[in-house]
Length: 257
Image: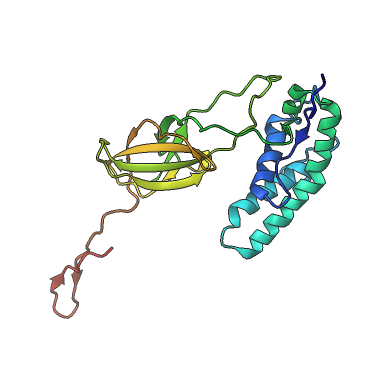
């Protein structure tokens, strides 16, 4: 018996959900039909460059999303750009994906779109693994947390769940961490590329944990990673002796900062 609801490529986002629109469009570009051109041989929308066409529109949307917080002009521009990406680019690409796939689940997943009328509910994400923490090319007192990357599925593999765009939170405490340690949240719900610790003090041993988040679903905290900073966020206050011209008396002003 044929399925009552055959597989269809779907968007699972409206034009006024800019983050979801950006994530979907980026997935189609980096992991979907623009990569799988052997299957999608006549894509109706040219990819363009970072300043033109589909890629240019998506790049601009990402920039506006990053700069929108607290800026009403950028919020309006972001929402208009989201509508543009959704209506001008994603809609015709969706139609094309369904024409090529013809209800074939594997081909739908190769397109970068999700399948089925309702998104599959995600489970609690697994705890991330910290690969290393590095101060390379960072400002004094900063270090970037790098996570172990999940291996990409081989081309043509049928995905059992939609792609999840996780956010991450970071907490720290003095190392070594114990059962009674008081943890302080340093970062909350940021992307994996934004895991930047700041305000670190040289030679201070800090215990770090990361948690993955899919909306309200939160992973356990990662295994603790201890990091000793090689730089400080700011130098210790110093005092400079001064000489009073009239008396020749040398005084030392109080330290500030």
